[in-house]
Amino acid sequence: MRASLLMRDPEIQSVSMPLLVGIASSIERESLKRYAALAETMARRGEAATAAAFRVMLEEERQHVDEVARWAAGVGERIPEAGSFDWQLPAELWSSWDEISGSALLTPYRAFAIAVDNEKRAFALYSYLAARATDPRVRAQAERLGIEELRHAAVMRRWRREAWHRERRAAREEPQPATAAVASSDALHALLATREAAIAQAHRALAARLREIGDDESARLLETLLETPSRAAAGAAGPPATIPDTDDPVHLLVAAQKPLESLSEELEAVMSTATGALFEQTEAALVNVVTRLARIALRTARALQAH
Image 1 (tube, rainbow, N blue to C red):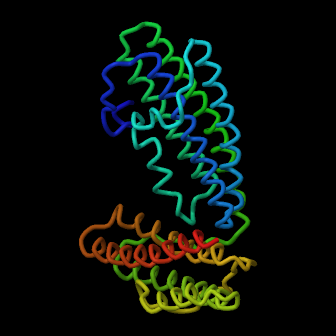
Image 2: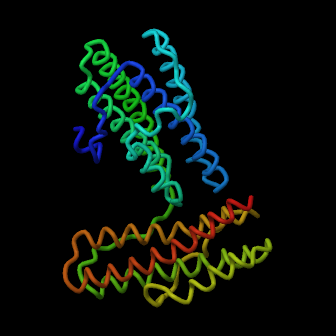
Image 3: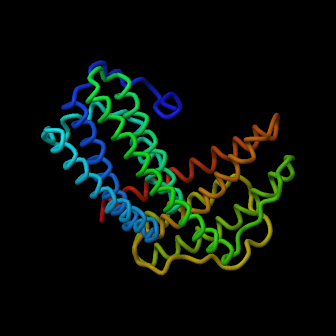
């Protein structure tokens, strides 16, 4: 389990009680900081449901911080100053949040799923510390902390399951684009033409709205990206695009990211089974989509900073 959850050996040779307390405190403090920042970011991006999920995790994490403080007092140790032991923490405890925080498709289900994985990584770290501890008392406390992380993971799993059911119900209530099996170049081109038509329709509407609220730079970006689709749009795009009823450019830019992220996920699924020319064509389309997505994400980040 440790090998699959932690990418490298933490290389901690001597495990003392002060070290264990310092690491435990750093894990919970860093989680608290991350959840607070992500809740704020998601709220500013207009992702109300995902922001609410992070606020739920934030309240749970506050309890964990208090639990660690009580535990430390019980073993006769003081909580060290913030940041004192951060360097001891494996990067993979937080890298998943760094990788996904800018995604327009970070739903409550996905947020809880990442939190479950991070709790399991913390368990793996405590298992490592227990194995390295030579003092039986320290070993027992490391094992206790590991068990607590598994308990935390169980709570997150419950929330993840509830979020999955909510999102599944919502998906049934909203029309979703059908994805046919893509096993040939013709099928790939048909998929891209349909998706690009819908993306173009949405981006034109969003660009017009951005101009209405005075964000000409963001509008120009979306209009420029209309000139470089992965495939020329074909046929009708379907019903008019629904855009957020907001004057916040960040919310509108996040809406522009979503259809591109959805298409990137579809293309990744095609690449997982494609070979030969189909694989190369799908890869080229994915590079195109990701490049456009990155440019919008960068503009979104700048708009967030300007708030």
